[in-house]
Length: 154
Length: 426
Image (tube, rainbow over all chains, first blue to last red; front, side, top):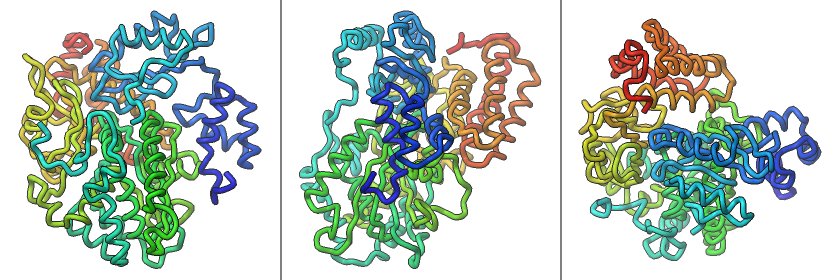
């Protein structure tokens, strides 16, 4: 921030960092951001509530975003969602009682060539099958890293 | 199949990794940038781009050079280049594929654009689901910096330029140029109506170029090979260059294909995307993302470029071709698209915030067997009202609805008369 002529350009990065630390952007994180940027709570909240990947409410350790736009709809995102709901016992917008998983929708994540697709902890998994979804959940439960995402760094 | 066609943007594309800086340079990479620095005539660059006929690849198709030339020569400093890699238009994934193929073509394109308008800083705006692309761009920018192509006094020319990768918090509207700039400045990204245009007053009130990833990746190739070469790549007389076509939906091999601008739709679908599955028939497509109109089989052989589509009342958009077959319910598709628009509306103006959910409710009723005859004229009127919105978002949302009613009114009526979806909700 000290290097930037316009520190405010870093606000989303800072909110994402705070979210990483607190699990979500809670009021304490908000007040820290206010102090850092010399902005009012309203100005910060205006941003925090605007973005799909900044959470103002508590979320689970693993946040699952299921892509539900047109191509994933054609390729059966609903069965992916139903499977996740059945396995986790939660609906869209809910978190499992053990605090492990939150289930949310996502607008077209740009993997229409590997549809249906979803994001887990901001990593993308495509060409989903029931077996693949189960494997991903299993890895998350075991605390290990989920299996290789479909966008490993190259 | 696409290896039969001259590859420009994808010339270094590999199945499993990006092209390294060394590989990019071995094919002439950064020569164009070095040349414009050597010749040191920033005003010459837009002239070359103008002669090439390059039009913006982000959706609107605005002539690239005209945007560059709009930056006033006596405008204040510092100036900026902002690269739009938000790419949230449903069906579109070309920028993701391009970044994962040849990232240095984008960085070099940015550097040349920056030189042309005397900008000193460039931002690449990346959406959250492309975190991997953001990491690649950051790492490769570092390598370009180490090689002396970014930073202070580049190649001893006195010109300095550097690139920052900016991560978005994720929202479709950030792809709109004025919203993107507000997002970059840490403000709530509601669009702002021009004037002033970003080329006059963009980031922090300074002249700013906003270009799409694919547009900029073309720049080094045009400078190196000349504008005539670029024009000659197209299949149509008024087109120029190649185009990254994304094909998805009901095809055997969905993917992103680099083909001459103006390649016929039927050829893209059949020769490159593997055609439709056995027994399925092409019913319609959205030729350029969710904000374009449904195009019927009548135009199955149309040349896919800006002018050909415009001449029949359609838009090339992002050239993200979403293919729908005879067993897909277009009311269902439209309902899904409108759900997307309703969720992603920034909420700033009434026609968009209130109008789109209203359209969604009517479509929902029709799709679920609760539709009534009067819903059809109501939908028509509502989609006209969407044009009163503040930015292009709501008119984009109106496009699939309006074209559904124009070309597939019978299908909509069947839903109403049968009191259910004739396709079983698919």
